[in-house]
Image (cartoon, protein in one colour):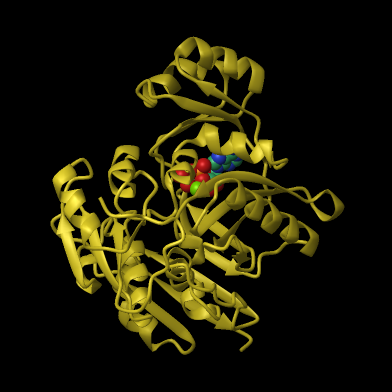
Length: 366
Ligand SMILES: Nc1ncnc2c1ncn2[C@@H]1O[C@H](COP(=O)(O)OP(=O)(O)O)[C@@H](O)[C@H]1O
Ligand SMILES: [Mg+2]
């Protein structure tokens, strides 16, 4: 077995292994290539956006030990572009090669109860919550938390999937059936004014650098638009970045991560509630590709390679990122003709409803 020093640093010509082959893996691979690093993608799908731009790819299951061993022996470090990587996969890989971010960060961020508990333990505010394992606990939980509240599966949810809004106590049985008996979290409904996120990186040396706080608009529970800077009092923005820094430090995190927040109250009463932590590059950080000194993808590559983190300042007074979801992408030609607009397409083929096909970044005041 090879030695895997926790402080191993990559150099140009080395190879990063990426678990997952979606658009996030694609954009990480593009950023790595610019720094002279190669990427080897490992994913179960036969075709994927990231394969098109990587030096190498392996089609394999996340429980195929032999294939994972082969993959580990071909790379200097492994990262991932989605948080549902099985713990066992990381265990197999991390005995052979550094996996960044590590198993601890992944375990916490895969589970909505553990991540909210961590945020609370670090002094952050969250929605009230209880963990739910059966219908009786749900009935009891609704009595404690009140309505409206939201029942979410602890694991595997994204873009609002695996969630059920409970409006009255009588909804309990329907809600429990809707989540098919999976372990859940029940959260109080937060009457937020805005949603914001902090995208930041923690380097191998423990230094944390955050991008400016981003304001996020969702449509049908899918991120539609991100705007920088967020409408937020500077003191609130500082506290959001402080919370993100504490979370990353507590998790011994290495790489880019995002913390999603709800903004409640105005002026002196303005507060942020931690909603979720994503242990990866994040859609609300896509604006950094064209709108910040260093993109979140390059920052992730730098962090996991043990290289110095780049500057995070925005390059315009206001930057706006809009996702191209489903048929939105059919406007690619006219979007390309817009002045001061940058188009990114993920090479996904057929647009389907709800599918993230690409994004555009627009600049104001530069
Ligand atoms: N406790 C809550 N109170 C109010 N709105 C919520 C709450 N939880 C989630 N939402 C809304 O649903 C969206 C998706 O929920 P989230 O927990 O971020 O899951 P995911 O992004 O993994 O689907 C949030 O961005 C927010 O708009
Ligand atoms: Mg979310």
